[in-house]
Length: 539
Image (cartoon, rainbow, N blue to C red; front, side):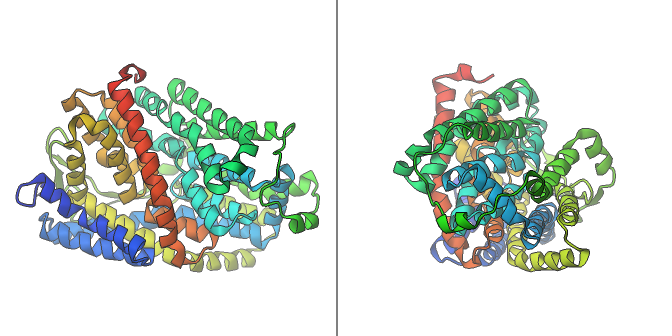
């Protein structure tokens, strides 16, 4: 049994935090400055973390190796599994020619690329986040947005940026449920707390997205659409999170946003066109309702299967088939120590191979059935599947490496050391609690994992400082989502989904990081206001 030591370097927290930060700084340097490929950067950071975990923090070699392998396995399943399924579904629609019909149907609704960004990147992406999460929104929405004519880099960047507002309530509310379970805070109050921070962001993001994409002058022409989408999404998110709970927040909010935009377009059109493709439009055919329905069937099946997989009676039955493996040399072999936990606690390390219950499996069923519906033969589908595997080879390596790095940081205590350094900021902690959540998501690529990692630390620190623990826990989740757009696995998924060259990963990282830091600071300021000026806002 090995006990984590959060002041392993000379018994000093700040020195220990500086050393713990070295692998993360190396990761930033390699991908942003040296412009090294994401998979090479991730492997280098993993190697550095291994040396520091064993050499400076005293982690046994067996623990370090087991945690890295555990993380890599988690990266392969369920994360890469759902990405593979989502990209496979998309490629089937392309190979069958049905994606052209889908593009025509969207163009029939509107030819304006600004509205495509609102409809696909923000609203539809939020729906997929609420139903599935784990990389699927960026994969599916990114592929669709690139498919309707948005430049690949823009499609990837905008989908990463859009995949912020819904993430705290993603995957049928799993991040909030996880946070409540680990901190002991009431689920309904925690949902309401996040539901009073996230809607502010949700109201901003449609405008922010459009300005980033088209510039302010071109944005003014679509302000009614931005207002309709933002108000519908944020308003529904607030109401559902506060009065129902976290489970259907994203799904209902995204449906409200899509419905609001479709309704608006029945009697309003932008005063100008943006990226209006005359040549392409001239060749577009008008399709019957039956043809359009057939083309959309794979995605309708995706919605059906994801909702079915999230329906509790079905989910319980599917999870009964899950295989569980206690990770050797790691399960209950590492003790987490106060103040992260109230008393020394053995950490669990159980790999869940939920081969049937995973959202990726539902997505794969949708892809196979959808492929058959649109006329693909089994041999054709097998060929497309093989091509999808080749396309995802490097992104899969990146994702597995990053998750191995993240789990090694977690089990060695290095991430907690960084968290404790943030907690030492005292009165300013509500602001820095946002960056603590951001750090957690950047390292792990998951709001759920960041909540599991830092949720209890947020609560314990708030109680010591006399702050509302609901606020800091909610800030961890609401601000953490800003780290998702710069996590290397998210970038790898976006690059794969849009067909960008892998050499553009560093360019995409440099583009997203400035938006990530700015939006995290905004949430930090909101948290400061709620903590010190309007504490009555929180439940």
